[in-house]
Length: 262
Figure 1: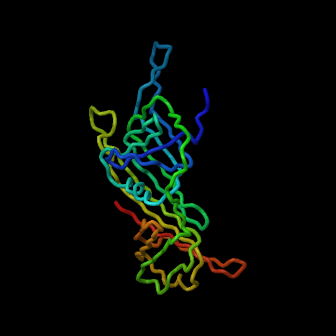
Figure 2: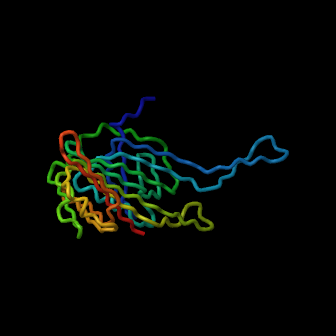
Figure 3: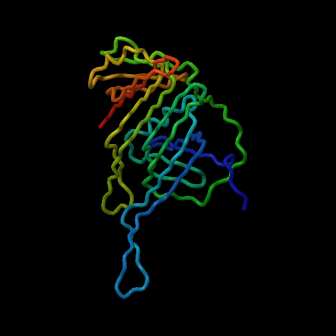
């Protein structure tokens, strides 16, 4: 049996509560199924007995390239949903998938990328990995922070822009969900969102006087606009800040904004 190589596999995801397939531009992908089992020893029996103590669950992780016009399709999966989405690696299909985390990074001369993690509460089914014929190169435009990316801060206590030149940016979304099980159903009837935490870390060349502008619990808004007009925005507290000067005398700073939605 020949090996199935990366160029003959294509992954898809569907929009929340929709049957529309979207290509997952993944550089790597992994998936696993787990079952909660408990070993029961019975008197008078040589063989042990196992019972299922929890639902079957799956986890899917992927590193993806961010392409023009496609980012919001992924970010929108962080919201509430009735049926979740589907992750397909034909012929395998993971049902009731919910985005648990989205972590994107932006650096000069690096293509924008993100790490995704899904929890799946439905049963994964399929007969094997489908070997496609070799795929042609995509015509999609890969996003690069070098192309028309803008960063804007809004804060009442900042007299000047805290960082004048940006070296790297990290944007994270973490979603806490609660599965709701009902009698007579093996899988959750609904998976509810309990909390969404957004975090933005910005590092770059710093204005040396910006630390004195900081006040506790100050609400700071940072908006990042990409070349395809996709907008990342966080409006929260300034949870962390730093300032350092290297041997070349260049002041560098970093700040982290955290926003929680319950």
